[in-house]
Length: 181
Length: 181
DNA sequence: CCCTCCATGTAAGTCGTTACATGATTGT
DNA sequence: ACAATCATGTAACGACTTACATGGAGGG
Image (cartoon, rainbow over all chains, first blue to last red; front, side, top):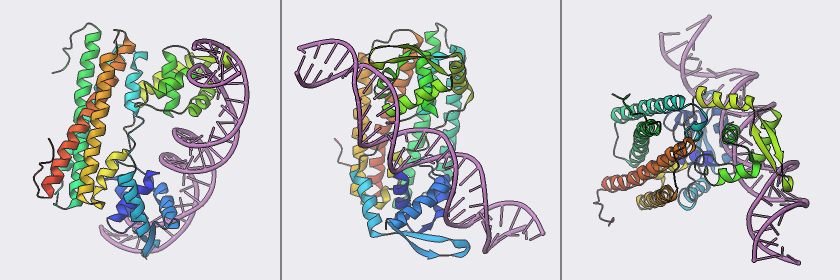
């Protein structure tokens, strides 16, 4: 249900085409709310039919620029402020951690070390993105910055947790952890 | 695709019925991998058809106790160690943060404060669960403990981030944050 | 006897992904 | 000319949710 709200939210910031929106989902929003090209176009059609967006202009190559309507703004506002957000109900990595007892401790250890590496890599990416971005002081930039900071903190937490988890695993095996550094 | 693997993973730890598994998803695993009753039963049938689990015993009230087969163990192991886990591609709360520029700053502020409250409440729940649980020293308990610790760290991070975010918002409004405490 | 919990299943519908299909425009 | 990018759409399938439907067993 939320891709529609994401589309409304992006269109609330200004008119855009399906192609523009699709690129936003594949870049800026890729770790926040991902969507396929296919889904973007079908949901735009549905929002149009529902009267929450409308075609503002048509350009070359069949380009359709959409804009949000008043009904769309009302729906967006309602969803944003009056509907309780749902926390994530699934985390594939965490599921695997929970099931790690079904493989050998050495294999579990490698798995955890791989998680640490992935988390550090993503953390570096976020830091680099933060540094290279010139954050203007408008509201748009502010909330983008808050979102990115969340990613930085999440990945830092994940890396720290992985290190701790490997240590706990080693402890449980009655073996001192002397592999790091 | 992963509910099947979750089922295999749980059955790798010992035989269980659909009802048993369903309860695990609604309790222990509710923040890790949630599933509805409906889905558990349909996927158990599919795993049975695929030869990855089999009916070990039938009990009263039509109860079917399933057990994992060798083919099932192979598939579980393959998924666990050879398939790269996918990071979460969607975070509804974060999507809303990103779109918070479309409402008034006061409303955005309330939204962030509400996130902090939710994060603190869940953190307390995890801490309480950790304290009341008697962690035996087998492998099963170890990985459950690692998972719970992740939840504790995530919720702590989330609460801290919320406080920071409110401060950033206040800063951007050129107004000193004197509302907290 | 009745309520709660145990226990399983099906049907309809939504959401999301992958693959297919097509074509215009711009830059080199 | 050719490649890359812009630009939109549909079809098939898989994952997941909600609702419907049924009934046995055990405890008070």
